[in-house]
Length: 92
Image 1 (cartoon, rainbow, N blue to C red):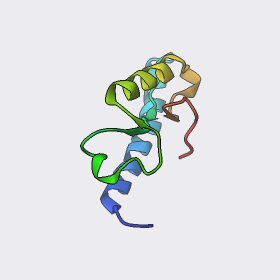
Image 2: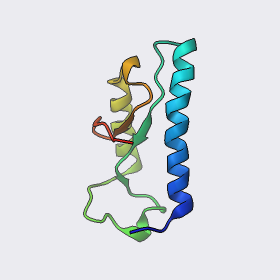
Image 3: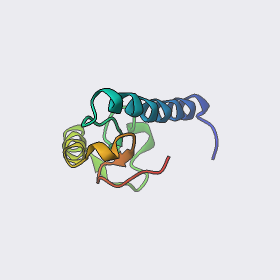
């Protein structure tokens, strides 16, 4: 649909930062992970004006618990990746 240029550019920059930081991190701490996480649709003041858009809505505590579970299941081989709240890979 277009629009939101600054927001979209910031997300692209974040994705690149995670990818390159994971490479540097692996050189110094091979077992560490650096990933991007998508929490799903979280009920916050930021998302309130947009509604859930038909998506499942999570409280901040629920979203945090899901993301911690995802991180707990990752390995160093997955560093640099982008994962959603269910642990599924989100393609860059």
